Amino acid sequence: MDDRGGSFVAVRRISQGLDRGNAYHSSSGSTAWIGRGLSCVCAQRRESDARLSFDLTPYQEECLQRLQSRIDVPYDSSIPEHQASLRALWNAAFPEEELNGLISEQWKDMGWQGKDPSTDFRGGGYISLENLLFFARNFPKSFQDLLRKQEGDRSVWEYPFAVAGVNITFMLIQMLDLEAVKPRTLVGATFLKFLAENESAFDLLYCITFKLMDNQWLSMHASYMDFNTVMKSTRRQLEKELLLEDLTQLEDVPSYKLLTR
Picture 1: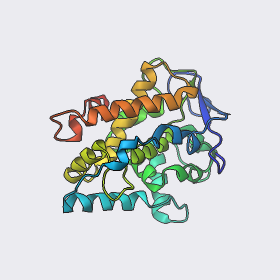
Picture 2: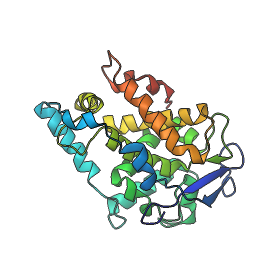
Picture 3: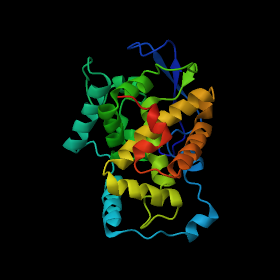
């Protein structure tokens, strides 16, 4: 991806699952996966949203501020902790294959756009790496299914797994209005109730959203040019589910049932 977010890597699916070294091939295109493409998916705000404001309890404010602190951290390849997290992601994804280096052509097998994943984190920051790692550690079955495209009747040209993950992080930050001092949407206020009960609520919602996105992808028989449409559909469905009555925890969201450990 260039600095303007003007290109992406589509993933061509040759066979079921991930055949190391020859299962996926990259192809350049003109639609952005990170940046410009996301602006039409995630950053649309209804006029009424700006007039809304929801009061928070002191603890909810504290939880929001901690999450905002995570969101504000950019990925920095010179920081050992960030390097270790990236290596941990590789080990979780491909435990039987040794990584040659943090800059390696191997990263394309995970769905990064080039040999240096750090260039893709500009769209989501360090938290997008934390989200992927949380997904891999807490729902390894679903993580591997999505990584290797093991479920459903897949498209010849599939979305790149890792870059799609960064898009999902960005979309959730926008949808929940997490960079505001206090929520200005009902869905944002609802999420903060879950966050006050579970400090990992954002990471868990990320996992739910990723699996929901793939489910929408399959039901829409989508190909890579449909990615923005699928993301819009995913956002609408997620908002509906978060606003259902009688939800006491994120595990009550219907799409949570799509996840397997």
